[in-house]
Image 1: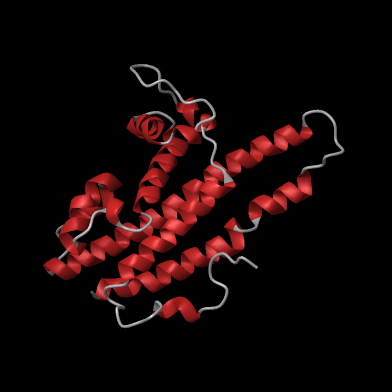
Image 2: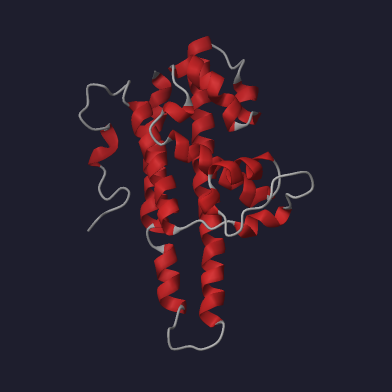
Length: 212
C-alpha cells in the first residue's frame, strides 16, 4: 500500500529520538548528579527524580508511536475506501478499539504483531502517567504487577490520580518499549518491501541502539 511509504519517516524520526535522547539522557543525568560521597537524602532525591523522568520518557515513546500509528492507519483506510469516512474514528477511538480497523485493513491484530503486546502495555502506562486513575490503571494492575512500586487495590473508590507516582518504569522497560516500536514498524513494512532483505532505511547510519 502507498500508505506504507510513510513508515520510513516514522522509523527515522523515532530512531533519532532513541539514539540521541533515550540512549543518553538517564545516564548523563545520573553521572552528573549522583555522588556516592554525599551523605543524606541527595542521591535518593536524584533517583526519585530520575524515576519520574522514565515515566515521562515512556509517555513520550507512547505519544510518538500512537501519533504515527493513527496517521498510518488513517492513510491505509483512505487508500482502501477511496475517502476519509473512517478518519474521525481513527483519530479519536482508544487504541484497543482500533483493532477492528487494523484487522480489516491489514489482516492482523495489534497483539499479533511483533512488539504488539509491549505496545499495548505502553499505551496503558501512558494513560496512567497522564490520568492516574481509570480502567488503564486497573488493566495495568491485572497484567503488569511488576511495574508498580505498590500496586493499587482495584475496586470502587480505590483508584486515584496518585497511581502515576506508584509506577516504576525501569531502563530495561524503556528499552523494551523502544524496541517494540521498531519491531512493529519493521513488521508493518515487510509486505510492501517484501523484495528487500532489509527495509530501505537500513542504510541510514547510526539509527537506534548500538551494542558498541
